[in-house]
Length: 349
Ligand code: IPM
Ligand code: MN
Image (cartoon, rainbow, N blue to C red; front, side, top):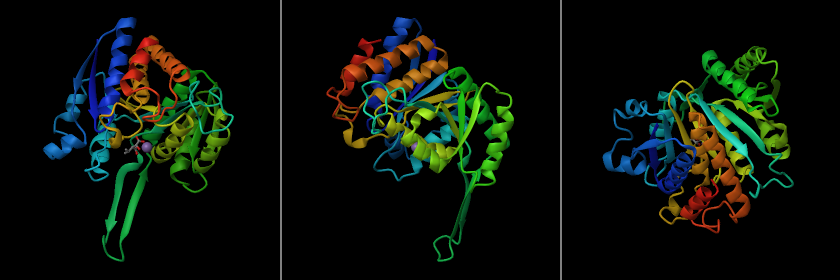
């Protein structure tokens, strides 16, 4: 019996999560486990109503759960930054979810903008450090609003933070047991302090993993290779900012935000799983948004909880639905409604 905290969020988030929970309930029954959900209404609507982003006890409360299932946060009437920092980043930091796991996998039947690339070519995982780097929020202004204004934003890279991320990546690569290749994505030619630390730690720790091939690419070059030769990659590990950028590129080559899912993982604590697209407010309530990303995030959550059989059943069902049914992954162009896509996935479980 698992206790899951559910944050449906804003816009189309609740519609996506509704289908995700439908699939989770169906697979739980088939495989033989149970779960209980508690819904937390956080997001833009909550903020506009109560004038606070999260209530004081929210973090402590969320720590009691086995996992968090998040829809999407973002509201057109809330200034950019408030909800991102106040909810998403705060949860990542305070729950110490130091890994952001983003599989980039093209399923059969899904269109990729990359000409001549097939599901065999696009199958890798990005492991993004999730609590440090430029996201740490250190820096400030000097003489703000004057012609002499200075803005400083510092990338924080601690040996401990980098090391735990790299160790996770090596272990992940070993257990994934695919190409056994770990690529460090950095910028050692310019960011000669931050990525010097990353590179040294990468090789020092790598010596403990002789079964894993070590590879390195600069972040600009990796954007090129991800498009030209995605088949080169198995697992990519990188810092917070570069990981943010390259995973949007990754989402596009795997078919778009309609299918891209991610996990914010604290291997020793509470992890949070989410479709990586936004709240897509213009489609709210129309039953046209693609729920597959949320469904795939649900599968990642089950995998994390140790329900491997259930997770792979969902993944296989999603593959069937993509290859046999959907015309497109784009909202409104799937050939099915949001709830019909959820029903189809259930049907193939
Ligand atoms: C992501 C998002 C977030 C990030 C935003 C919404 C703060 O882009 O999960 O990749 O930058 O990490
Ligand atoms: Mn992002």
